[in-house]
Amino acid sequence: YIVYYLLSKQNKIDEKTFEKCTKLIKLSIPPTIKTICEYSFNECTSLIEIDIPSSVVSIERCSFYKCSSLQKIKIPKKVKTIEPYLFYGCSSLPKINISSSITSIGSYAFNCCNQLKNILIPQSVAKIGQGSFYGCSSLVNITLPTSITKIESYSFCGCSLLSKINVPMSIAQICKGAMKLCRSLDKITIPKSTSVIDSYSFSECSLLTEVSFENHFTFIKIEKCVFYKCS
Image 1 (cartoon, rainbow, N blue to C red):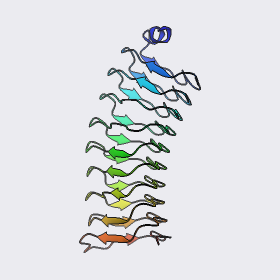
Image 2: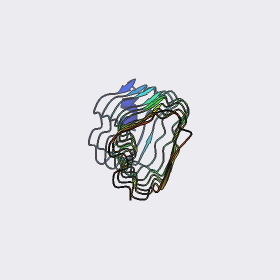
Image 3: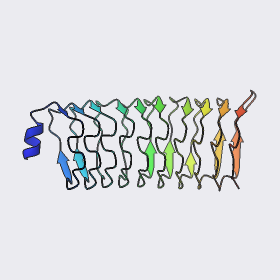
Image 4: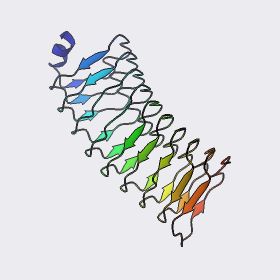
């Protein structure tokens, strides 16, 4: 209650306010808060649940960096971007709802969120940054929107249980290592919109046995080692 009262006198949670508060388990943020600044809850390793009010319009990068016990959080609809490293190392987070207000997902935003199993990315998202879901080892299925034009480097690298991913017709480029080490992926369809597949994009996808190219009548550039160690 004391923390809630003190926060209610502010319109933002300052940088590193709760950094390494390892005994913090649950927190409700008052509706006076509009901004959660970077590293606010950095390495709060016991934090399980946080209630963010609808008044919040911005959650800055690394705010929940390595909150390894975090299980319950909801991103308010006024927030437009999931900033880089926002949930990096939140290894207990089982699900996240990405609302239609989100326009971009920053680099390494969900890196090593080992409990995430399914992700639905809405059409409002125009960019998914490098390494966004790197090392999400429990991720089984992901739906990508037609609003993105490329799959960035290492976006799904190390998603070892990912068995299905749709590559939408809007994709022009699959960047370096995008799906490297997706060891459960057994087939992939490359749409006719894709003109570049960068190096190591599907390397070490050890179960990959079927690659289909959809009606490719134009030149497609395939870089070195795209299917390296795909047995």
